[in-house]
Image (cartoon, rainbow, N blue to C red; front, side, top):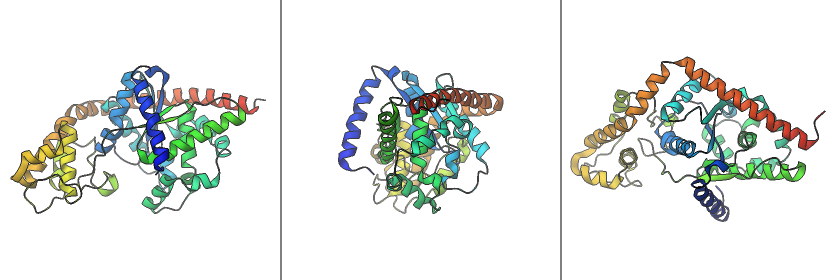
Length: 349
């Protein structure tokens, strides 16, 4: 977590870019992405996907990486990775990402991007990598040994952002240290070898955190996440068996009633209403009525997305073509950037 001073500075910069985006979206190139460790859920949708589509439709150059190499930072298997990657592409398309406007690609298909790791690693110290709080948190959460790939994860992320000259990255506050390392790498490279890379801004998102069905962070590993790919029936079943408490009166109290408040937050974000307003409306209706309200809200909101998803999933040739074209374009861009890097470093023979 960045200190208050650095956070306030990052917030001011983010606010300036948010304002400028409304006037000059064409000045910006955005990079963001996901690890293909399973199905995307409502937390991903409201936390990032909605914002990606908004930036895409504003005219920002949008790039979305499926970070398949990063799966092995804290896992010992790549079982199901192909299925996860293709399903992630389907989710992206169903949620509104347009391959004519947004480049969707994978780490492993762009060797030129990964080759940037070598010069970039020379620009950061071991201490700078070790004190990155996100790396520490991910290691503790997984219980996995600190692999070299996990330690250098922030540098690899800098390669993702800078290969396409990305200058904005949508982030939450806890991801700002990654942006700080990327900015350091870009600045140090430019100072040492010549101007190649842009200044990078972490675009702080204002979307409220969507908790899981038990009030904790929404996560596949907790079993509290509603996946975008679920059917209406599967969604209803999951919500019905979610935890509640013995108090009949429904109130919004995240601290003392996390499960009930998590359900109310989900209903609120899907309907555009306040969770307290929904709680007051249900009143003595109890958890049963609350769960019916949540089910209707989620299934109503995601019905058109799931309909598109079902249609897209029937044409896997198209899904593969979207990814292959994204990989081709990414390689083209990465090769051009790598040529600039070699030129700046005097490594053209």
